[in-house]
Amino acid sequence: MNLTDSLLPADLLYLAYFLWVLVLVQAARKAPWRSFLARSTLQHVFLGASAALFLMWIFEAGIRPALGFHFLGVTVYTLMFGWGLGVIGVSLVAVGVALTSGEWSALAINALLLGVLPVSTSYGIYRLVYRYLPRHLFIYIFLCAFFNAMVAAGTAILTLVTLLVFAESYSFGRISAEYLPFVPLYLLPEGMLNGMVTTVLIALKPDWLKTYDDDIYLKP
Image (cartoon, rainbow, N blue to C red; front, side):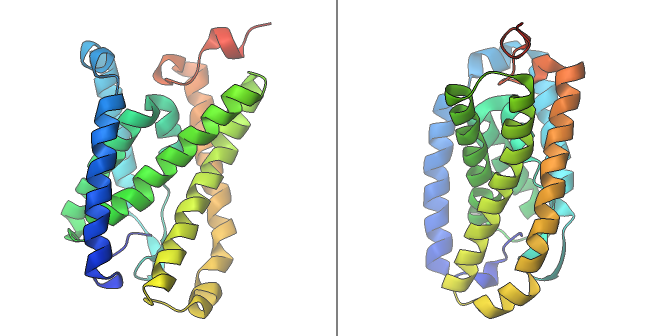
């Protein structure tokens, strides 16, 4: 899933850096810096969760560059920290991955594709569920975590495939034959991972989830 420098044209890579900077500026404006800096526990949880994402992102299984899979874990990360800190966190993780791979030209496009896009998708679905559906624990776990993670990862993969076909890095026929048949096998574990971690956090550390409140989801 991680793009390399040679797969996309230079103009697109430069445009990605411009868009990434704009998103980071907006995320820095939206992030709850006052509460973040005042709570050392939140800072430690943020660093620990970011380290866990980094470890998931550097291990990828695939047969060709960019045509691989690794757990994103971004949905539960977004439920823990919200959109602003979520975007900043996944961007830092993308920088860490670039340090290990050396793919600096593709840093911005990877940060947008694997970080900003699924974070934004996850937070958008959470907001829709919160606004239009009953505030029930099962709905939060199943829709905001499990289903949400599958949609977010699927959106990232669909965008990845579109970019690769548009740039003529791979033909759609090759991607259809060698990559897309395995996508459902990836999306279900991604949903289960995020759903299970969210469930554990609700049971043991509900205060680590910015988007969750016992008084709202467990009210009689």
